[in-house]
Length: 369
Ligand code: SF4
Ligand code: SF4
Image (cartoon, rainbow, N blue to C red; front, side, top):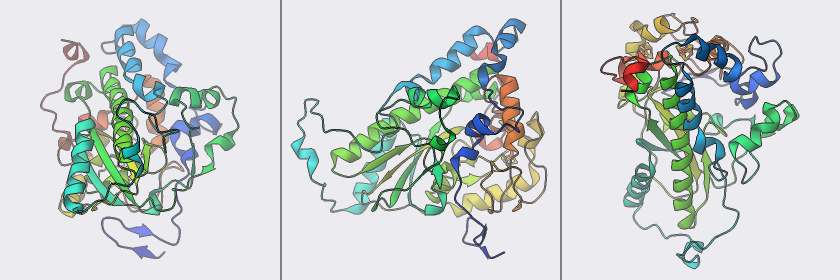
């Protein structure tokens, strides 16, 4: 094993292979018949939950969650790699065609970050593109098609699995990635695993779609290219770490100094001339030390999906992990089983993490007050 210790990662370079998105649990459940969650999604248990009358699992709670996804699921332009045509929306288009001549790289980088925050990002960082984190193959959405429309066929099992195995290659010259973290509502997350927490995640996804679409157009209006991404195209967490936004926690999530794991991550790949941020090594060291003795997320996990080992390892828990990197691996098969049982994502490991800075835990009823 040839281990490259290029902080913040220890990687088995000989064995590392780019992740195939079809192994992500949300896709694996569509094709892997060995899984107890094969063919299942959140609707599986909803009627039972509603009829039981549990706090945080009412029809109103589920309505909140499903509506939170609205922009993410229905906005066809959200995850575009380019715009189909230069449309005049009243500002003319000629001035958009030529590349904006960047004279002061530092000021221009600051303005680009300001634009990202203006459109909705809570945190912004910039990294040089590292091909390791780009999916080897994945689900590539047809142009100008919404998430809901483009996935309808595979959700219903009508599409060939090969649609999940399209080779992912960034166009030549796309060498920077703007990574954005979007804060999720503190009170809603504190109700985890009840549905208001799931609604906070859903809303986070819709905010991602809105933010990357506006930032993508800002970049194109300056004559450069923009590839708008949510969880697609590349692994968001290592890109966020490269962009200086935080560190990887025991719970398998990005911990940020500001909001801990209480964020969603999105990114825009671009050829804009930008200055990359430094990795936040100080924070990474702090998290490494903290997670060794803090087991709050592992203790809060209903399905023991989070390891209680003291040290990180190279041993993946399932084929759904991006392996050959030294870290705490999460058994995402178990995690997803709980999500199906819960009729929504869970978020316990976000709510209890001290880095999330949740001041007090609320019940779902308190959330609605
Ligand atoms: S989301 Fe819930 S089930 Fe999944 S790892 Fe976190 S605590 Fe465990
Ligand atoms: S809860 Fe504790 S162990 Fe888990 S990620 Fe947060 S700091 Fe690390």
